[in-house]
Image (cartoon, rainbow, N blue to C red; front, top):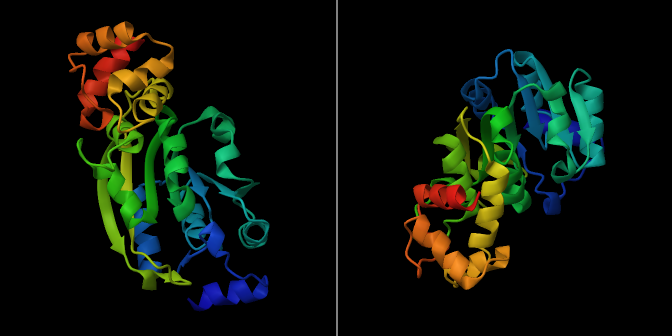
Length: 264
């Protein structure tokens, strides 16, 4: 924590709560994240490096590190303190993933801001065919979504896309005291090992966005938003061996795979 406070003072930074700026100060947790990420000799993408507590550890182990930071003051810290790291100063949701690492495969390590956890995770999962693994720190409630089962109210596109693309495990639970300033919620570290054979995640994402667009409606009604007639939507469900009255939250991963196969 001493180093964190020193950097905040040196660069005259006041943590921005709106941007989720809670900095990891538990060195043991940072070391474990790097170990579990298994990024020796690999390209690594870090999202939201903040003051660089995790970044400097990644840089000592990885082949190369690209850090994407939206906040100018935080970007300035990385520029000055970790010049060997390639910094991209922009919102990660605007970052061209295809242009990173000259097309080579890479891994991800990130302390995700709570307010954009789902959009960032979905963007990464849509590119899972280029990613070896993702080691993510996130709000505990958000982390649980990776493990939900069909039928749950929190089961949705993130759950389906993550389970389709990755083998997922929890690494550690984190308390507010592991951060400065302390957040109001607990956090968790999850590791996602991407499946090499995964493909068509962009198409699956389009299907899932339609399927879950109105959760209280049946899947038939939501599929009609894809310019299908009711008869066409019902025929697709029949070919995918799904009931005509089913809702998206009741469809398991295999069911969505069948739907994708029928549609495309």
